[in-house]
Image (cartoon, rainbow, N blue to C red; front, side, top):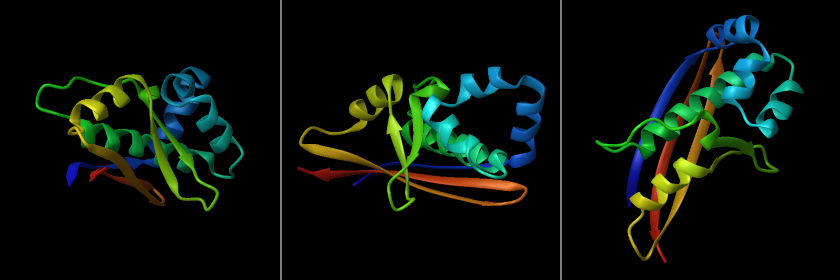
Length: 132
């Protein structure tokens, strides 16, 4: 069963400008150390940051309920598996929200797709629950 879906689009130049204006303060507030390490090794790192920014928004939308508040940026972490497929790792408030949405006897899975074509980065998240 589908528990939630979310999508987001991010203007890569907006992330570039935030990095230029606020520097490490913006990066530390928004991205985990592992995300920073991954993005900083890439050429055109702003597009990698923008995809992760969009992913965090998409996952937050998929987790949202009519009464849920905001999540911390660091509650959703984007990593890549060995094949390069993006994965959303949930921490603290995001994990609590996922557990609250998941019916008893089910296991939740977060599916994530990322793409970019300058000047945009997009993310799509779907949360699926499977019967144990």
